[in-house]
Image (cartoon, rainbow, N blue to C red; front, side):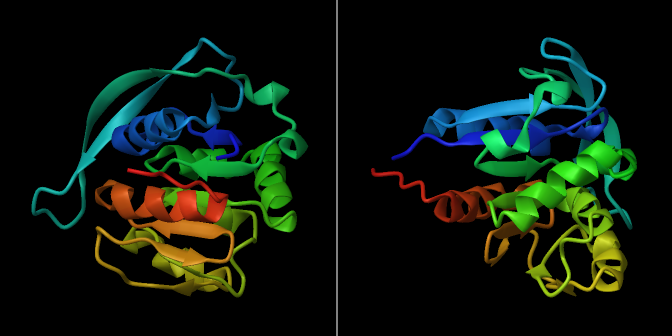
Length: 193
């Protein structure tokens, strides 16, 4: 298996599981994963949020863990990376306002490099105008944005993922097994048991 270099985009109040679990899973496989947040450097921390599904009309939110970034956003040259992963949670609503984040996403889309996004992470993709003509999923509240950005929203079970070419998306953290398995396929990573 060829080791891949992956940018992992996250930020303050990104969803806890959607940050920690895929970051660690991709490292466990042997990939070189650089967790970054705009305006923060390697060694600095973000605070995550824990989102849960407890029978209310939407998810609940609680303070999560501190997550230590292992790379600096300002040092990221997208041409040096093989793939991009975008965490969900509340961080995407402000990260999508950052021009450098949008430029980063546009690079990966234009180069047809693998992109994985989960939950509200898809808001960054819609803001970057890279979902036009693509089938994807997201947290259901993001469906209008997907549609307005020219994408086709797939309403799937919370445990499922959707792949369209280089793009792998999932509605929320319960889909991690399918989402990460599909992303590994798009990366060309095989795991032998």
